[in-house]
Structures are given as C-alpha cells and as structure tokens.
Length: 122
Image (tube, rainbow, N blue to C red; front, side, top):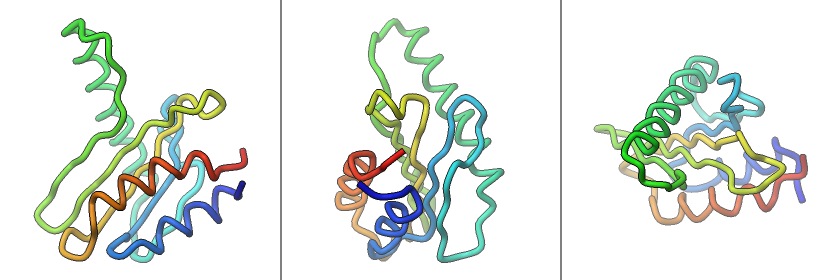
C-alpha cells in the first residue's frame, strides 16, 4: 500500500503522463494531485465531476442499470482518462489522468489507473 502522493507519482512516471489527480465526486475537489506541467486541478476536478454526473444521469434516464468504469476524452493533443473507483472505501472518488496523445500508450494508462486503487492506503 502507498500514500496517495506516492501512488500518483508512480502513475505520473508512465510515458506521456502529464498530470493526475484523485477527486472527490461529492464535492468536486481534488484530494491529491501530481503534475509535470502547469495544470489547474481545481477547475479540472470541478468540471470533470460534472461530466461524470451528466453521464450518470444519462445512464439512469436510459434505464441501463450500469455503472461507469471509465471515461475517455480524446483531444487533438491529449487524452483525458477518468476512472471511478470500484473499491468500497473509495466510493465517490475518481482518478483523472491527462496524457500526451503522441507519447502515451492508452492501454497501459488504463491498466495503471485500474491498479491505482489497489495501491492506495487511505
């Protein structure tokens, strides 16, 4: 088990990783964050919380009976990967990873985020 800062630092070592945060879905606030570049985590946490809430409302409206595993947002030069925690004691927490699209391996990043919650000692 690792502290949130240590676990996030390990994810940030992935090739192409630019920034990562753990965010509280209830408040929209970043709980822990690491970055290689200047990044406004307060704003990113808040607006991506709204992205998740909107998708949750859509799933409910459609009667899908599903939960969100992750959300990928593809930009011209970046990937933004959002993953909701499946761990009971981390319910309501999501990870938010920003990747350089030209340098990152999306499959490895998704795998790393999936393993992140197993590393956290909260």
